Length: 207
Image (cartoon, rainbow, N blue to C red; front, side, top):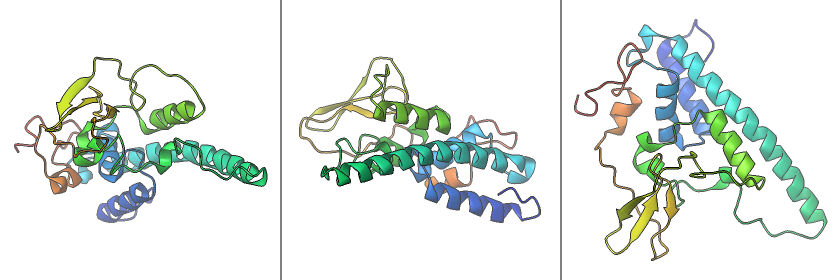
């Protein structure tokens, strides 16, 4: 990623690999987040350093996660030696499934992820895991009124900022999040939502 001698296409592919290995918002949403936070242009040639900014943010967040994951692993080993083998509930935030968890919207609509930088998100999740009672949405901290969304047979309450499920459907099942803005993943991957100057394309997703 840092080797400027490599073709931009290869460096971009390396970023994809990095996000595959560590994606706090899920692969699609984490990639979309990085395009925004690093001001990654539609044409990478316009600002090759955007790739470096993106991977450095990802790396900073990953180091915070690794430190907490090592603490958790050490605690689990100690618990098992003491005969406490049951996995704590809720499970650590990095083991949550984005498919059937409260963050399902970030898979169905990758642009609805939290606006927090990845290190800030990881710090917030680590703090909550440690017992901190933080205000607002557990994911992004948004304190605005919740949004009610119909499931056809009930209602869920979503975070206004990141669409995280804050109150599930009475049926107990997770439901697909239907985004208000239709999108094409290939377009997001090619950064159709960005301009060459690293700013948002005001015409996306229409063009």
